[in-house]
Length: 285
Image (cartoon, rainbow, N blue to C red; front, top):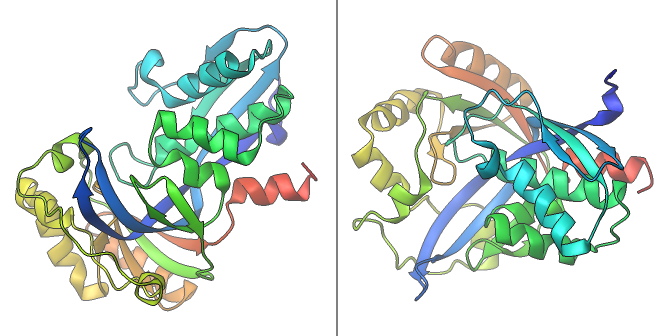
C-alpha cells in the first residue's frame, strides 16, 4: 500500500515551562499548576483509516506492548464510545524519547483521536474529545485542544494563553524517568502556592519535580549542572528532557551544535497553535 504525506499527521511535543505541585487528592492524583507550550517538533503518526472495523499497529519499534500503546488505546476508546464501524492502520514515527517528559505518547494519542474523529465521521466536539483524552492521560487534553495553555487540576483544566514564538534547545541525557517514581517519592514538594496570571505567563515558577529527579538520578544532576554554561536549563514534566530558553533561532541552533559534543540535542521553536491543528485549519476541517 503506497504511503502519501497526507497519511502522516503531526504529534507535537510540549514543554512544561514551570510545574508546581499544589496538593494531593484523596484518589492519589496530584493537583498541579503548569504552563504548557507546544513545539513545532515531535512525533508523526501515520493513519490509514478504512472501513474494516479492525485496528492494526505496524512498525512499532519503541518497545511498548500493543495493549499498552496509547495510539491503539485511543482508537479503541473512540470506537467503543461512539460505535464507529471504521478501522485503521496506525504507525508512530517516533522521535520524542519515551520518559522524556515531552508528552510524546499523549500527543500520539491525541492525534489519533482528532484525526479518526474526522475520518470516521464520529462528530465529537473538542470538549468531548478532551474528556476522552483525559481518560488516557492527564496531558492528552492539551494536545487535543491544540493550544498552549495554563493547566490546573491534574493538568487537565486548561486555559488557552498566548506566549508567542519562543526558541529553545532540547537536550536528551539518554535515560527514561517513570512518572510514578517521581510522584510517589516522599520528598516531593506538594504544597507550592498558586501563581497569579502575570507570574504564570512570565514562567517565573520552577519544576517541583526537579529536586527529586536530581537526587534519584545523578546523571540528570550532572547534565543540568553542565548545561548551565548555555543558559538556564530546566526539566520538562517529570521526565529526562531538558530545555534551555534561547533569545533567537540562531542562538538555539548554535547552542544545540555545541551541546551535541556532550548530549543529543536539537533546536526547536515554541508555538501557540499545534502543527496538527494548523494543518486541519488549512484543510478546512
